[in-house]
Image 1 (cartoon, one colour):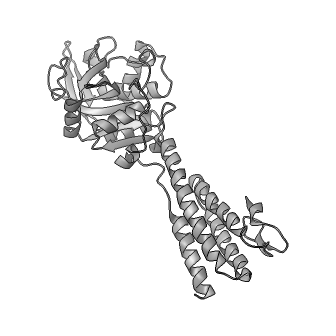
Image 2 (cartoon, rainbow, N blue to C red; image 1 turned 90 degrees about the vertical axis):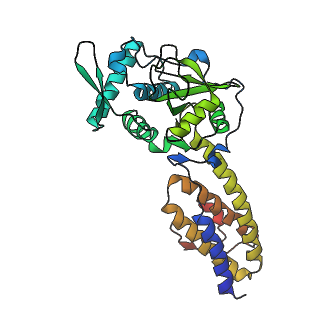
Image 3 (cartoon, one colour; image 1 turned 180 degrees about the vertical axis):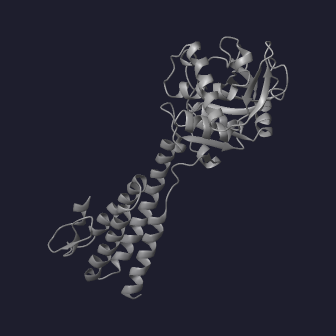
Amino acid sequence: MSYGNQYKTIASLLAVLVSWQSALAYTYVSGDDMALLKKSNPSHMVLPESDILWYPQAPFANWEKQNESYEEASASLLYRNTHGVLRVGPEDFDAELDSINAFEESQGIPRSKINKLKSGIGKAYVADLSIEQIADLLLEKYFHFGPENVFILAHPTAEQMESLLDNNFMLVVPVNTFEVNNRYANHATYHVMPIVGYDERSFLSLDVSTKKGFKLPYEKNLLLQSIRNNSDRILFVDSPLASLTAIRNRDMMAKIDTKAQAFKTELQSRLRTLPESRRSEVLLKINNALLAKIASTSLEEKKMLFKKFHLIVAAERLQKPVQEAVVSGSGSKSTGQQSLSENR
């Protein structure tokens, strides 16, 4: 094989590895992400029971005012329980629901539900919010979660929900009150609620629709079937309690290590086939290509590319000291015995 073709082969190998990335943040997650979770929580609860903040959506039994605030109450409990913003009284919680409802109206959410008060004055409520709307409108826009920290899992299984809970992710799920046998609901209606744990038979909820909703159990199969009938999606977030982004990063780095080792082995093998006079030139070109790529990438990509950059250093140690080496991030040349490792 000619030197030119040999270099092209090495360059092609490099191009594949430089372009390889592991996704760090998506709104939607997959079963592959769920496979990264390890069951290591014997209590099967997101938080110790004494640490969980919970109020019903009508903390003063003011159901006429807060009759449709279950999405807002669920989002508030998710935020406060996962981010250590726990200690609010019922007055503050009730005021927060009013604030969220006003915010929704300011965002143009249609006022489609009318509840007739005993006084005869009509109270309009905003429309039901889907899981995606809760993520976008309430968590990202109202509570200021970054979009990379709000996750939606489609087609969840009981095992996946259990794994998320065991890894301290609080869930928000959509259901129909009739389908899950909510004995406190007087009619069938769309509903969402946080899930904070599970036992052998049931998932344990913070059901905001009743004053008896703290750790209210719902039979697993009924809950899952109702989730499937109501968009088949559940929601969870990154928080100080648990971070899917951190779990993904750990998995990404393990994959990088595996790919990097394969890259190192093949690079070393191909370099050995080149005369020493060509090795320096080839290493220099590859090194410059990596440095140029690093300069134009995000922080997370930089971490991956620096790993590959260091492999160039490892490959260089196979040969005698080179006369040409990169001495700056711009790729300028210098004579002497300087090693590529000075660019670390």
